[in-house]
Structures are given as structure tokens and as C-alpha cells.
Length: 459
DNA sequence: TAATAGTCAATAAT
DNA sequence: ATTATTGACTATTA
Image (cartoon, rainbow, N blue to C red; front, side, top):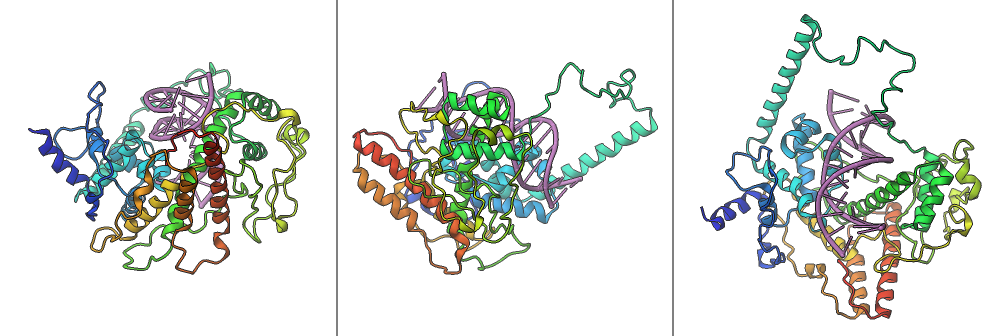
């Protein structure tokens, strides 16, 4: 069969219910089609509905832009409406574990920020949503699982338990517990809240600590170096994603009513990141951000502790903010994280500085887009109307007056419909994050501009 | 070489 | 029971 043929139908399969006639804009030019993936790998062992061949990878490659936020929203609805769990859905439909599914559904990244691999689950979800029997199939799976489970239990009860307690026999209960066990299982590190706080503080001053700094942190907190490194990696990406969703939600808060549908959606309101304040930004320069957020509430979070973490506390007198009331601003208050001398890691050539910067240029438009699309309830009519008039700013381009670019970035950022007055002070934290973010971006742009380098911003 | 992206899997929290 | 969180790993990418 001609690839073009199948390609077409498949593309339709993936299409979102609401055919956004955005084709006019195209925009994904380079997706050259080239099926680079034609190498090894078993590819898709998953269900992938009846379809014939064509791996999802190929589907992903030619998939039109999908509204990830809208998709996850609908998936969540369907799952909860039908009492289907994430584990079942994940293993059966996506080939992912429960934890991954939870994360994906709660914090989907915008389509354009996803790699080919990252898009896969979303394509699968879209495919699943389009499948008229999706729920039935899953329910069947559920039944089957239960049956199997019952069976197992039965046999183990009636029969002598043939399996399970693998070890046993010897080993008794042992008071030493599974300690000496060849150390086969790592304990799984669990950072104490104090340690996390110390790391967060360090992050705020330097999102990309030098190896030296990392080493010091590890020593002071009594952690393995790799743990600290991992923590920074994880934290950076976590922060990044948080900004994504905040943008999206901020952009969609406007209206909502419309045709509410069955089952309430997921009310998420303000997740308010606990006491971690707006990390993620500000490393650039100005103080700008240090919010205590949460006016009148959990102000008194864990504060004093003299326990184990004294290492951190000791070296760095905590600056914290004893006075939540006066959040005003806490400039990078002197307190260098660990060991004063620390200073800067300096190196880092290209893009560096304030790392935790997702890209506003892209994010902003994305937010609008997602919002628009997802706003429409699952299947049906009125889909978006907005076209791609403004969504042009999504790509690199490069050589353009930095100033101009910055201006446009600012515009798109601020341009977010602020209408829908309804919000009061609630958006403060968000605003701050955005502002801080903007600052860091500006900082980078200026830096770049001054050195007249074409640099490629991935906006 | 180091940063990022995507996940896993243990374990916390509901 | 499920769902959410998060340290660690693996594969990519620049």
C-alpha cells in the first residue's frame, strides 16, 4: 500500500475530534517525513487498536499538533467516570507505569516541547479517545485481571502456596531483617525536608551549581554527590514543567462555564507549591522574587530544626524569612549556600545563567492555544476560532534585533488575556514567577545581544 | 562532558 | 486501592 494512502487515514485517526482547520498554517515543515526510525527495535508491542502496521512512531512523526492538555483532561474524565485506574490504563494503553501516567496526566508538557518519544503517549491517548470501544476494552481487561487474580488466590489457598514466599524456609524472620541480603535492594534515598530546603535555597542562588559547589553541598548535607546532582536535574525539570502548566491554566482561567459536561473535571485551583516559593528564577540578577506566598496560612511551615541537617544550617546561617508577613523581598540574601567562599562556577558558555527558564515565547502562545482548544468539552461542536495569527512567534529564526525580539516576547507574555477579571490576589505568585522568568530571559537576551552572536534561542 | 527528556519503581499520601 | 511524588537510570543531544 502506498504509504501516502495509509498516512492519510492514520493522520485522520489521530486527529483531534475538533478538526481545527489550522492546516493553513502548517508550521511543521521540517517533519520531513523521513522515517528515520526504520532501524531496529520492536517498536510497538502495544495494542494500538486493530490497525494494521505502521508503528506509533510513524504515527507520531506525522501526527498533527495535539492539544496535550486537552487530551489529558479528557482522559482523566473518562477514566474517573468509568472507574478505571491509571495503572490499568497505563500498562494497557500506554505501556507506562502508574506513576508515569499520573505525572503525565497531571503535568502534560506542551506538544512543541515534547520529543518524538515524549509525544508517543499523547498520540496513544488520542487514539484511545477516538476509539469508540475504548472504555469497554479497558473494562474487559479489568475483568480479566480480576479473574486472574482470583484464580491465583484460589490456587494458593487451596493448594499449598506454590509460589510467592520465595525465600523462606531458611531465613526465618530474622531480627536483622533483609539487611545482609547481599545488598540487593538499595534503600532508596529519601531526603529530609530540611535537606530539600537547603537544596532549594542553593538552587535559588545557583540553578546550575559547579561541581565544586555540588561537592560542598553533598558534604554538608551528608549526601552522595550523585544524589545532589540528581536532585538538581530533577528539580530543574520539575520547575520547568510547573511553569508550563501554570501558564496554561492561567491562560484558560477566563471562561469555563460553557457547556459543562458530566462529571466535574478536575478542580485544581491553586496548587500552591508548598513552602518552596518561587524558585526557578531570579538567579539572574535582581532580587525580584522571593515570595512567601500563601497569605495567611501555612506560614509556619517547618522552620526550626536542629536535627540532622545542622550541617547545612551550620555552615550557612539560614536566612529564611522568619517574618512571613513581610515577604517584601529577599534579595539573594547574603547567605551563600554552603561555605561562603563558594562563588560562582563561572564556566558555562552558552545559555546558562538563569537556567530554569522555559521559554515564554513558545509557552505563552501555547497556553492560549491549549486553552482555547481544551476549553471545548470533549467531543463536539464549537471548537476554537482563533487562528494562527499570532502564533507565529514560535520559532527560532535568530538574526533579529534582540531588542525587538525581547519586545515581542514581552508582549506575548503580557498579552495574555487578562480579561475575565475574576482574579484577585490569587495570581500573585504566578505573576511573580512570570516576572522573574522574564527577567532572566531578558538577562540572557541582553547578554547575547551584547556579544552579537546569532545564538539560537529555542523559542 | 554535562544537560535534558522520559521513565521506572519505591513509598507517601489520600 | 488508587493516585501523587520523587530519587535514580537510560538514552539523547549539544
